[in-house]
Length: 238
Length: 284
Ligand SMILES: Nc1ncnc2c1ncn2[C@@H]1O[C@H](COP(=O)(O)OP(=O)(O)OP(=O)(O)O)[C@@H](O)[C@H]1O
Ligand SMILES: [Mg+2]
Image (cartoon, rainbow over all chains, first blue to last red; front, side):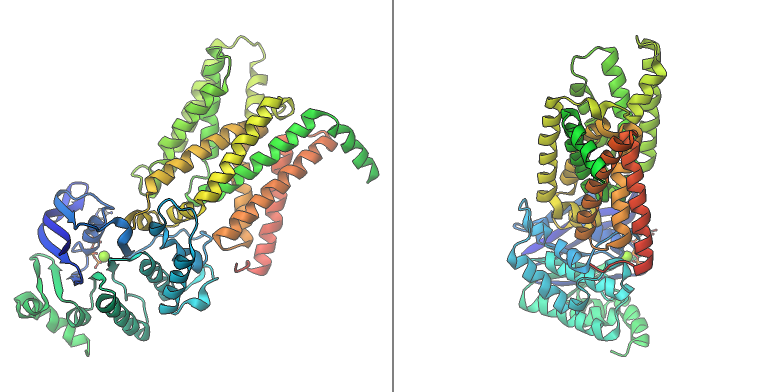
């Protein structure tokens, strides 16, 4: 069943289109990778899917039973003011806010969930630390833990492994795969790591001057996929 | 030392002194709770802006001879607050420009109206007392005190109930929206509550000093503490303490109430800044 279906979607800023006439769908259980060059509009597409931004034309249909509070999201950049006082625990817990609805306080399960997410991202020891005093990679892990708290059916990740060290990167990919396989969580991931995209994803959307959408096998056989994979293969030893 | 207590005791025999203390402490508490959010949302100046709106509304109300000014001032201020804060983090027109525009506009229009229509000869004195709140806190009626108590309880309860949502929306509005938190709704709620606090606070310290009451406790707390919860609690404590101390000192020394409270806030800020610099802040 389709969770998200995009029909003739055109998106951009202030009426100026960046991407035109996109047609694709994300199904339950998909591991969906979006690849493309810098500035091709990947992050913009994600924001449009999340309804943070209105599409210029076309439609985004959410499948039955997919509510905004089932969605986990990792933004590419989070603008946090330099002086914002917030501990890691507070931020991770705020990922559960969507589940709360009108309930004013977090319940036991949500606190447990936040704890688990912090363990998964190996940041328990940072729990009481101030967010703004963390390193870039530590911050990324905090925001990933927050996204894990929010996700129930689908997880949207904008370059999740940028800034992570190789060990945590590998763990991250394993974790996402586990979520996808065991918990049947649909994944939409933007990545510049083509090797990983090809390794884990079952569907690939390549955006740029020409747009490709299809399964991994189809992508590897396409002209564009071959070129891109070759480029990536040169630098990656996967 | 004993003399001071005797003197204070004497003063507390007067109901207006007790009223002033109750109202002062409550308003300090309410404004400090939302002060943290305002400073973080880069709306530090909203206190000033809204107070000028309230001043303009007050001018109109006094010209039209409304029997109860508050019934006009409150809705007008709330409306402006909503217009300013509704946009949130992603507003196209940034908050500070809008605030400056409304603030300067309302002040000018209010002053102009008062100048043209005012029946009182002592215009300068009038404006001065509206802006600096030289006496109004000492002329509170029983009803006003009750109104203030009820509204403060309401504000504190709202704040506690919505504390986590306010944090989520203030920290990262986009994430909150994307994951199913009704950010617009909470922004609206915050806007309304802030407007109510500021109209209340005008009675205490007057328009020009309101911003200090909103900003100083939050900034003081942020020098030393680093989590949202501890900053919020600390700023509430600081604000209540400064209001309490300021009012007592102003009674004993015969100084203007509003200014004395703000000076107390400034002193505490200096102490906290020094403490923060010395210790590098406290983790939790
Ligand atoms: N807020 C904005 N207003 C106007 N144009 C924007 C805005 N943000 C991005 N753009 C433009 O939209 C295009 C796509 O940007 P986007 O951030 O979606 O790229 P991306 O594919 O995510 O790139 P990257 O790989 O660098 O993250 C770029 O050309 C950029 O200049
Ligand atoms: Mg991007």
